[in-house]
Length: 68
Image (tube, one colour):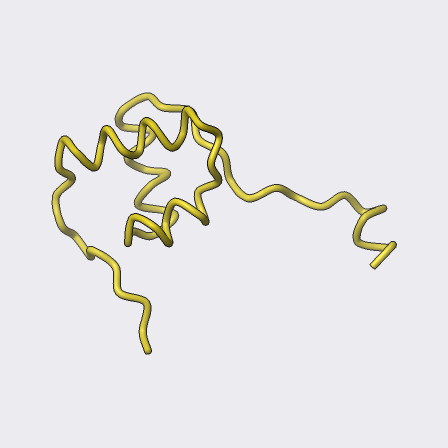
């Protein structure tokens, strides 16, 4: 089953408010993308347009990777 996203659909004021709320709560883009049905890049671009700081997925350090 393909991941269904809102390809090229306009952002509504409600979606902007949800994006702002989720970013302020510290959610990661990957999690927001799943819930909101948009791509991570779409969310990142919209955050930039609205001037909202957003968080990408946490990165693992080399020590964490070596320990696995």
